[in-house]
Amino acid sequence: MFGLIFFILFTPGVSEFLCRSSDLEISYTFCDSTAHTFMFNVTPCSLMNKSIWKAALTWVPRSDITYLKIIFKVWYDGVEVLHWKEVLCSGTDDEYAVCGTLKGRQCEKHTMPFPHLAETLATEFDIKGSRITFPKSHYDIVLQGFSDDSENNRIICLNFTMIVKQDTF
Image (cartoon, rainbow, N blue to C red; front, side):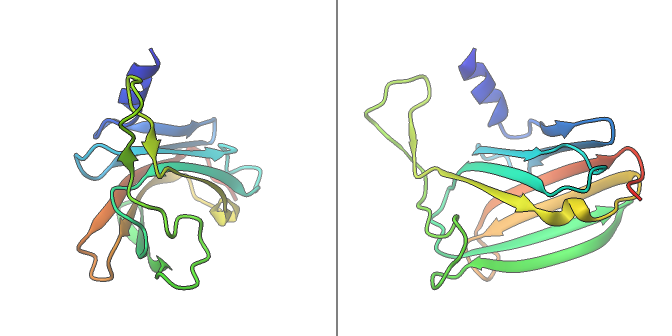
């Protein structure tokens, strides 16, 4: 049974619900058809209480992370309202936990249905965007990560859907 759940969570094209409540629904899919070992979670699942969201990320990257550029785009009712680029890892004086993570490799010595994966990044962090007031609407969010400045080597891409069911004013 656990193997089936693992397969569903990490199969390309399958939508994963992060949370669902009376005022908010968030889900994501991967942008490409490559299989990923990735899990993401946010709590609380609400925009009404104005608290900071706590996020948990578990990821086995497909490339060493000595350099990481993030591109974050948000569309509100079909119009791009945010386009943010940031270099999180440059190889020197990096402050984020993801920096320096090695490419994931399967360990040969394990014989479980899915081998133990080495170089797993597991971290928790705060998302302060939950303090923003969001009008009731449908939001599309794309998060891309690149291991080079030219944005040719994409190592992760996620399509998030956020449905705000009631105004948070």
